[in-house]
Amino acid sequence: NAGVTQTPKFQVLKTGQSMTLQCAQDMNHNSMYWYRQDPGMGLRLIYYSASEGTTDKGEVPNGYNVSRLNKREFSLRLESAAPSQTSVYFCASREGQRYGYTFGSGTRLTVV
Amino acid sequence: AQSVTQLDSQVPVFEEAPVELRCNYSSSVSVYLFWYVQYPNQGLQLLLKYLSGSTLVESINGFEAEFNKSQTSFHLRKPSVHISDTAEYFCAVSEGRSQGNLIFGKGTKLSVKP
Image 1 (cartoon, one colour):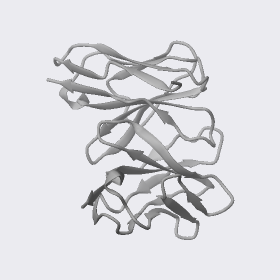
Image 2 (cartoon, rainbow over the protein chains, first blue to last red):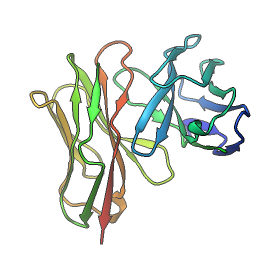
Image 3 (cartoon, one colour):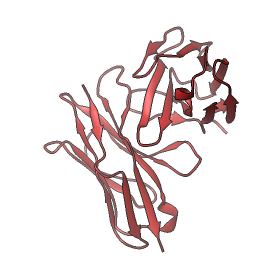
């Protein structure tokens, strides 16, 4: 089925470890996004990519980096994980301004 | 700057009762408005959206939302809820320009009791 695929679904890291969250979409969307979801905080934008080859910071970019590898893939990297980065991470893509986002199923990350 | 306020963090309601989930936004320009639903341990799914035209928009499962420009609101309603409507609902807004990212409210947890 067409959509946004995120891997892994679950991950436990130790403080200071690094990891990359993968995201791929097969809908030929130009824009891709990374959000984090924390209880009572809603969704907060980490980074986004308006088109292939561009990336921009969102509301909470500190401690993260991103790569728009090609039109399909947009990865999120934690270089040195901290307990404050324990969260559920969602990747999303969008065809255009008039369309809502299509979300992946999320990655639940715990940093101990 | 844009912001979205969902006035109720939790709404408990009995099955078959009506429900209204409130959403207010702040923006000085024209906006696009969205409601998303998140079932437990799942991603967000688009429920309905307002872009222009008729201020009342409907979803396929009986929800509706009305855009009120003067009150800058986009409240979500359903006349009779089911147990299966138990979920978290997010209101989101983007400015009607070339690259307006979605700004989300903090969510409202709807709990439908038998």
